[in-house]
Image (cartoon, rainbow, N blue to C red):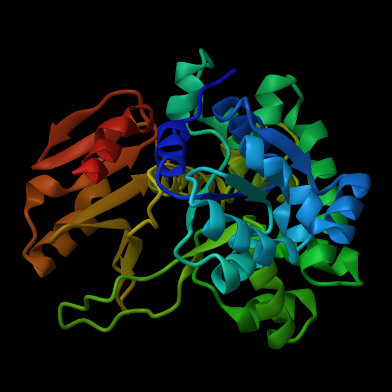
Length: 392
């Protein structure tokens, strides 16, 4: 088993809160994680129709299983009425770590939690593997193309499934189950087309007019469908940083996928070698690097304070970390050979912002890390050095 970085945080919060909520995309490893972290707990999946029927018909009896030892309820949002009963139980027993609730639909699960369990629950999010988790599990991480193409879903590594076999079925299952459950979208083929259009716009400013026109749907529908993708951990939006330094800034967020392997499949990439000449390689690499920062934050149990910066002239910083009272600018380049031209936007931004040049970083696709012209040049394989700054 590959140890998950979130485990310590999960156990710590379970010693302080009566209910833990663990959400994340389908097959990100939530069930495996909670079973390993809490081996003595009773486990029930509400995906099982028989278990779900018991929970629906006699919730009090079903939840009695939590009284002698803790209870894990998988896909808890399938029976929303349970949450009120859980509230009553934890208020009466006042016992930490009594319930572990997991789910793959963020919006539905958190909606019920906010209504009934506010103040009683700690909320964590589990995404697919990080680079450090793969390294610690003895898996080779030096080949960027392999990482981008295969993605990070645990099942690919546990069962040695090829990405070309895994992702088409993942997409089919996602559309037939999760999308239908969150919002009953009848035209599934059109929704998959919408998904593919989104994949073609990784790292771009979100333009609802352009996306809706490309798919042949209204802007209202595009916004609704995008919210479904966000709620089920397929995509996320990176907001622009608000500080303008007397420059006009773009106000639209940028679109990214939580997993590059899924994005590659949606882009029709059939093998690793295609990435070398694919138009989206640079955006996929950028997405891959930013994902590591998102995962790091989630594994610490915090919402990521991550942004990008772009002014109206097109000058841009790919990633800005808001840390304490400072801003850390990070440029991301897919080139394997360092070029000093990679630093021009960082120098522009540092001059404009008055920030310390020594706090600037360039993450690139090469093998060596070093300092150059007051900037930290970092191989993607050494991202841990930069991620550790977020602990301060």
